[in-house]
Length: 224
Image 1: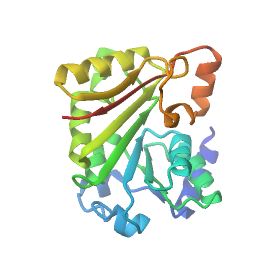
Image 2: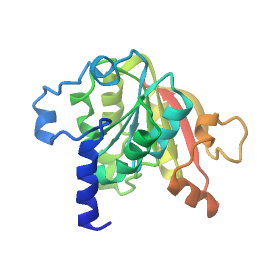
Image 3: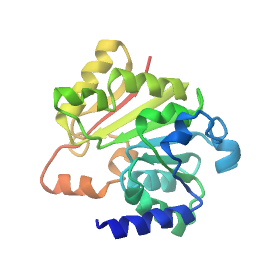
């Protein structure tokens, strides 16, 4: 994507009522106005809040919001030019239970209060296979503890990935640390029993993976 196109999308994002693009300084300052008030001031309802981390184009965020109007959904990604598509689609479809937040996932606690979130989705994250990159892996111990602090006590996390490495790493970590694995499936389209919300929504890249016969894996768990 050209820089001109990116700039155009960033500007259009500013016109969408469902997009927030705070600066890192604003986040770290610790006075983000919606922290603890997403229901009250942003969605203006008391529906449960569900996050999609690393939402990319926002296809999953929008897909979930359409299927489950009883929840509020927030897609989070550092690349606003990517989720522009999802934000625009949500506006065009008149979906009022969708928001997008441009920030880094490690800053998540600056934006959400303790127990403010009911559920988290992590869809097709970079597995960060190289050892030096493990600190960026979205299901490592540090990230799980961040999620735990913003999740309700019975909150759940979903990991959907095409990476066998990421699936195995996460499953091993969850068992090793004594977290509760509710459901795990190493090939959701081949094995029966996968929830409809896992097989019923497909991202652009997921469709490409399926075309070349790549298995899609899924884990649903609670952080102890």
